[in-house]
Image (cartoon, helix red, strand yellow):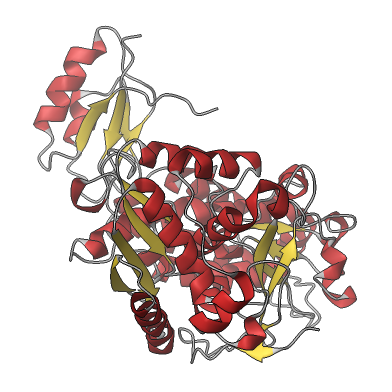
Length: 417
Length: 71
């Protein structure tokens, strides 16, 4: 039985969305019974406390990857942290406006995440846990606070501190989160050392996305074999997806790896271009979607990345170029303005793209700017923006050509030359 | 072996352009005056690179060893 539950979180950013969510196979199992600790423990029993080596081994067995977007192997991260008694940071800030999976997870199943955080803290021999939540979702913070009170009452001895991330795109970036924790502005700075070596106030830190902790808690409970009951032999387990996260019908789904894309998207959506991985993601043409599954390897073979699980099918009647130009306008405005190439390059890119899309300007300037901003900032905001734009140029050369002639092939048949 | 990377602290860099004057072998400036580092520093250029790092008005340059590659 699946129950559709509207996430109790209020308006998200300026889009005002309440995503639809249904029960999932692992992390989102039993959410219809509410987010309380009693029903959580009744269903699953007490959370196991494996030692660090066992946790690293299990994470390696199932090839658990970070779910914040970069997909770094979690076993490597955990092993590095385990050597150094690291501070634990759970990142649920979710700065990407088209992603709602972490907010949904924290709202519907906070104890699934907190079990993971507690398991990691125990394995690392630390009691210090920081949780970063979006400051624009006060209801989410209340739910997490209540969950923490329930756990304290049940005897959990963790020193948990909640932090409210600022409502901007780059606030969730690792270094920006560490700045926030240190009481400074929630913006990225240059990382000279990995946070596993020097993170929160210079101490070794294990900072990961909220969903990653949830998977770890689940893994600690069911073991590698239990975890692998979902997914494929190559890619065990499940993943959270946000569908149409900035559209009219947003939805958060938990699906097993290997699930065909046709199970996730409607027939009409399969016939549209797909922006995969969010605003820093990659475009795929509809012809590339046939036979594609929710799988890191399949998606990588198609030249894209699943990122943080954001799927944005292009709405019918829209032109992917017009959509990209609008996104780059937004992303340019989300530059923290601290790094010169990003502060100058992103507005220039937005302008060049507007010129290409609405006035038939040259693609060469857009390409040049993509090269100029890549790997030239404290965080990956310019890189992600360039990736989005480069994928637009690569996937839609015919559309670019027709725009050069003054014809937009969106349904609205806009002719502007 | 003795290869070093010249890394820019981007938030610190204020586009004075001193680095491109002192180390044109490795650094040029983009259209806004920010450095483009073209290649790793090695051999004779290393001493010059150290001078350049010290000369940056905002101390936005660092010489680092290349990080070990992950599998």
